[in-house]
Image (cartoon, rainbow, N blue to C red; front, top):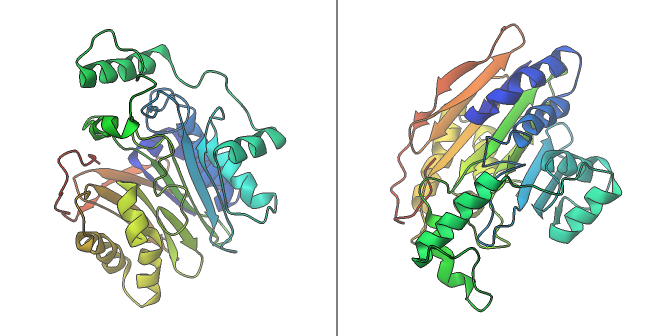
Length: 317
């Protein structure tokens, strides 16, 4: 049994591992670990109290995948429900003929299944950070909202805030039966254009698991992972016979071939069906892992694969 997670999964990995030790499934462990991060008000990139979109509205995305059946569930642009990963799992488990629900549809489904709702998803601290960002961009200290008549595309520079652009939580687990599951949750880019969806809820882009080969989850500039199909690429390279290190590195190198101006940072974590794990990123950083015989998680540096940025405001990892 093993769990790997992005570094911000520290807050949830112990509970996730305890679930595995108690006989829980890989899906249970992934959901438990991610829920802990979604509930953390100090993590502004996931769940409750994440950074909002350009209008000050918090939109959440998440996905989860069962490597045994390849069943998946995902939600995007969901408001008012902090545990996006649990709603995503119910999309999968409730036998809906869908994988991804978005916006009002995701919220309606969340209400139907009795998902925990929260009236106030942002603290005053985060609202004030958002307001100051608006004011700084408009050079008006008294600005507390974007004028109704203003074209939002003219405010897109807000989404290039280098300190608060991107962030995601990734969890991947293998349980005692050898089943693999992966999950991803995010509040997306800080100050993003309303309705923007990144790779986190897109199966094959930011998340993929298959018992036959392994699993991969991504964080960073999600538009890149969508275009390259990064998470699925890692598993396809494993299927072709590459080692885990070769497969992960090739998926990262594929990002260099993307054209256009909007090229930025990307990270991934991955493991193979035997539990060997790896992390790679375009900037220095770490991921965490814990095996059943370990008393605590360990931190491992990601391997560096440089992706030349072609956008001054590209997100930091």
